[in-house]
Length: 246
Ligand SMILES: [Zn+2]
Image 1 (cartoon, protein in one colour):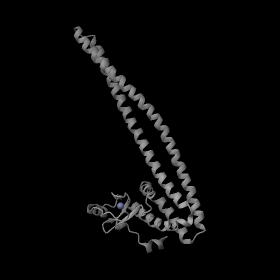
Image 2 (tube, helix red, strand yellow; image 1 turned 45 degrees about the vertical axis):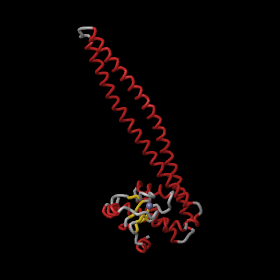
Image 3 (cartoon, protein in one colour; image 1 turned 180 degrees about the vertical axis):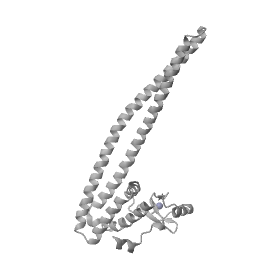
């Protein structure tokens, strides 16, 4: 995670430079930015669908156990009915059996419905995964278009684009996806905390958060006001060093 936050800070640094060249590349940088955000959103949808399916599976397993124990109880009561000494006892057991049967029936219906729901959700999930694959393919096409365009550009811009591509493949998906989703709204999706303020919306960051950010290098922090990712000074990119490296 610590490594990912440093990668994130480098990506944010590069994006800031590349955004200045945006006009020279026509629509492509914007299309890439939107595609990356769409991918992030699609992954969230997939995760939600998977979680609902998981919940249904747990419900079905639990219900199966409950249905089995209800059936057990019913069988035992039916046998007890042969041993009763009077009508009153017989009627009491009959009533209990009726209740158990009703409970059994209700739960069976619910289980069937959840089963249907699960089938539908499996279809939805497959569709979402197909959509994700298409989005990833579309992004690849856009990236190669950008690559072709940057060949005609200065060496400098071409290097920036290539470095970004490399950083993107090194950073973990979750961290990047969060960044991409925010970047759809705010170009500067990951910002430093300067003078105790979020450098995106200039709202004061609580002192405790600033201390946590310094100490917890494994956590990704977000501005509570604007939602931008917050970068602590320990991730600061040394411009000269970084530009020399690439
Ligand atoms: Zn903010």
